[in-house]
Length: 80
Image 1: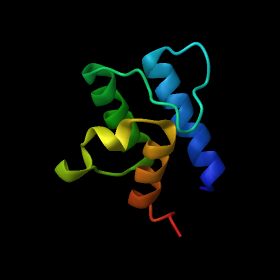
Image 2 (image 1 turned 45 degrees about the vertical axis):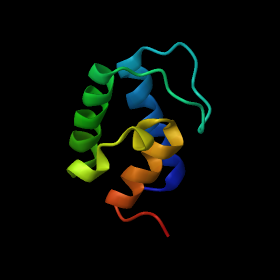
Image 3 (image 1 turned 90 degrees about the horizontal axis):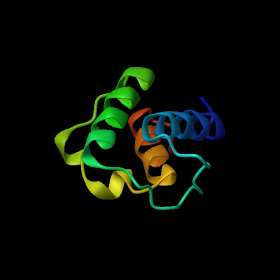
Image 4 (image 1 turned 30 degrees about the vertical axis):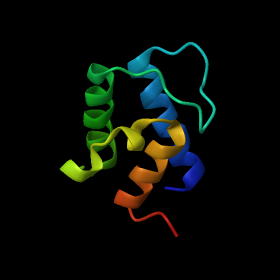
């Protein structure tokens, strides 16, 4: 999966779960609560066949679409 495809899929997941009306910019801080963050984590793990470790579950990794994409890419070994 290419970076743009990954970004698109992550954006779709976040928008579906948070019910955002407009697509957030890649580095825009996301307005998510703890319930939404858990739902996003579960969906990311299922859709990308990855597992987050406890050390991954910090706020900085879920602040923006960009930070989520980077974390998923790292887990999928897509970061060059």
